[in-house]
Image (tube, rainbow, N blue to C red; front, side, top):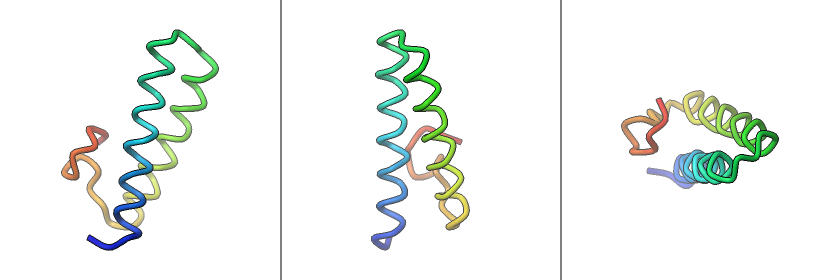
Length: 60
């Protein structure tokens, strides 16, 4: 896997962690921001031909 692919998947994992933290904290604004970041990260990863579900990110 190249550096770009690894960076994109790392972005997806970070966004997932931030979303989980926001949900756990009960912060509706942070949840909305984190959901947007996760959507963007997944969209970019898929645009680059990455299967985020197969990569073990849990998003799919």
